[in-house]
Length: 357
Ligand code: SF4
Image 1 (tube, rainbow, N blue to C red):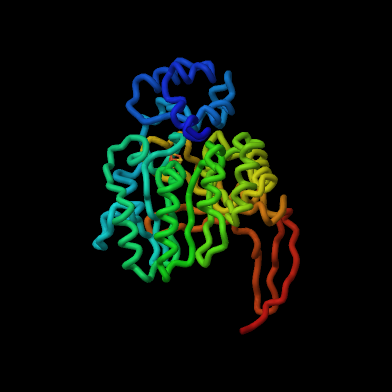
Image 2: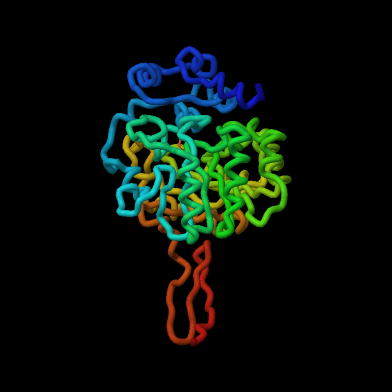
């Protein structure tokens, strides 16, 4: 058994095991014992939790909370709505679609950790929504839809599949002449870096007409370790770029210092900040949600001009009609026929010629 498989087999998903890592509060104990929700983490990620601080940013992503029973802003049947699963287009359960040329291909509902803020909670954590993720059906659908040029392989976490299964999916997709890229959405570089094994590297590596891209999810600088750095470096040596899709989470990364440190630290381990997502209106995650404008304010106050352009993600609200960028809006202070008045991150202004068509 490989190290990563041992991490999964020894997942921290009982109160007894949790107590080996943290001093469990009464509230946490009640949430774990009274709520019927799938929860758990790899021992590796559990080891990053603060033993005594219940507000530890890693602990809050891992340990269930009684607040998950509250639901003021959650949209009913969120995932059906968000992933356009109730439209007229007939698609296998494995295919979610918001755009003509790119689709999400769900291949598993298993994850290495069950994040408390997951917007796919109905499917992955609560399992109220039963969908059939048949890989063959999904492949067949993509093969027939020649307008699709970009496939995002997602879950759950696709890297929980065996190397052989991943090799099979990649090989089948790479046989399709209309495809131009394959993307994986996986949290493993952050929560299970042991997963980036020699065998997996051989599945991903090699120059091919259809490149592989990876996006991971890291929400707090504390999640980045030496092992993260090694896993990402190994992926890069296979020709696979790693981007980050953070989720804006109240009390975890919604302050200027943490937000800036997160994006700067990602670059130190060669992860490129890509998106920051507004925490979606799935049920039971109200306690993680900020006002919508918060992400744009953080980009304005923590990143734009304050640090390198490489550390600038796009802040988006991911809706059923696609992602809507909500970026800060201070750059153009005035415009006339002759010139623009442009404003920088410090509030200083300058003039720039307005060039006619
Ligand atoms: S790894 Fe992704 S899909 Fe799995 S629980 Fe976390 S956010 Fe949800």
